Image (cartoon, rainbow, N blue to C red; front, side, top):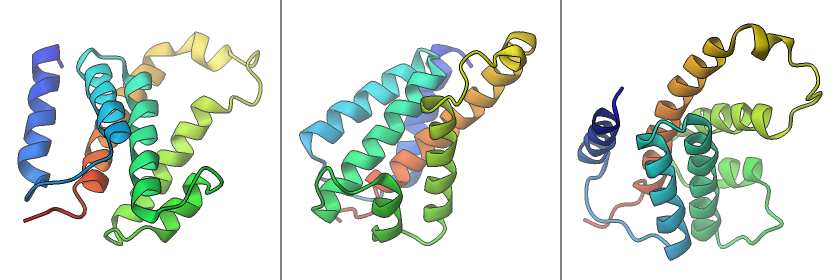
Length: 142
């Protein structure tokens, strides 16, 4: 996708998923903007990581829980659609694979097939943009 197509994708998601107004913390708004910008510019890993940060920030704000709550617990305790919870866990676990590299020197796979990882990241970044919006727009003000 081109940058313009990526921005169009985000607008389409907003048109599809935003059914009223939402109130977000300023931190969440800032992080969401960064996720959108990273996605539009094609920085898929940055978009994915930042989208998960926006999700966590929003869930933390909605739950009233502070820093000690783990993302897994925030997801499990969130007042969200039942079918969104497994998507968020999938995204969380995928993010963890990139954030917590077990053996950074075991890099034969990424060296041999970087395009496979890039394609997977592109797909997961799109998935993250949708999941992020589903979370952020889960309690609209109508």
